[in-house]
Amino acid sequence: MAAEYEPTERTRVRRKPKRGSYDRELVHAILDEAMVCHIGFVDDGHPYVIPTIHARDGETIYLHGSPANRMLGTLADGTACCLTATLVDEIVLARSARNHSLNYRSVMVLGTAREVTDAAEKRRALRAVVEHMVPGRADEVRGPNEKDLETTKVLSMQIEEASAKVRTGQPADKPDDLELPYWAGVLPLALTSGDPLPSPDLTGDIPVPGHLHDWNRS
Amino acid sequence: MAAEYEPTERTRVRRKPKRGSYDRELVHAILDEAMVCHIGFVDDGHPYVIPTIHARDGETIYLHGSPANRMLGTLADGTACCLTATLVDEIVLARSARNHSLNYRSVMVLGTAREVTDAAEKRRALRAVVEHMVPGRADEVRGPNEKDLETTKVLSMQIEEASAKVRTGQPADKPDDLELPYWAGVLPLALTSGDPLPSPDLTGDIPVPGHLHDWNRS
Image 1: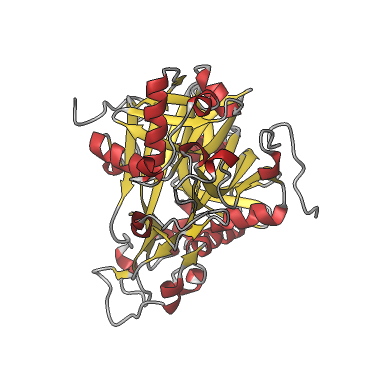
Image 2: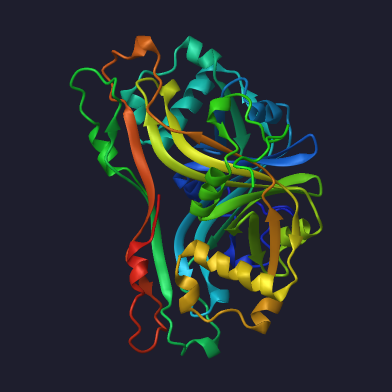
């Protein structure tokens, strides 16, 4: 399998090509780290952008939800869509307002989705979603039963037309601004977890799974 | 001004109406807390979703970027767009895989944008963007000069057709699952900042602004 996705007219990063990447591993890593993605599609002539949980298995992205979910129904009909996942890494603080920026990593995947009807693949997809949220969690829950599968719609989307955009590094102030008496640098950001809060209806003496204390994304 | 936006056929939350809100203050608060938003628009018949920094001033959302930016050009032409901002608050861990979820707050604003050409409004918009990233920062940088204004495109979008969606609270396991020996609860997440990292070209003895140590979103 090629190390890079083939750029197309629609995915090639034009204005700042150095920020663009088609690297397969980078695209995968961004999709895996992002807790949610944003799905864009057109319905009745108007664009909509809806946040949703996704999960990746190889070159397949899975989405899921209620069979009554409007977005999933529209996508299952073969409507073109754009799946975008974004991670904000650092605030870039320059001497000038103009050169402030964000360091980020984002992925855009274009294509169409299809409904997954095979029970085994649905199970794999739903397992991947749970593992995407909390690695290790799928082995400490009741997996989907027949009714769960019937009442969950799963879609898949192949990663074929995709690109990443990444900004890293320090601010790029103009030479004239370098001597200004203002602090410049980056402020790192991370999505971090606090203490797990047990459900009030938790029965018995069930301990918090230890790995929940080590949940981290960054 | 009404406390709620008027729901429309396009913004009314249908499937889980209790999660929907049209409350003006809630919509504003989500937009203000979200570091970036995702903009959906249609170009040459295909939907695209692009992450970007936004800022709110009253009922106006400002976007900005290079005059060569493709998305800004398309939006300035009056193309319909959807602006969505999403905050992920907690991972919801249930006894069953099926009842896992995310607690989140999201906002969707539908409409069109227009280019801001008035210099005073452009300055206000760019100040709002810097303040959106780091409150207090706009007073400790060099503000935009004439050339900065000329080489920055600013768009505005009115918040008129908007809705929020919010999930809070503990997992909703089925009664039959409550006795299962699996931990259930929520894992709180927050976007937190680390230590500021000075730019290598920082001259003199300029201290880190104290408020950067207290940057928090959640």
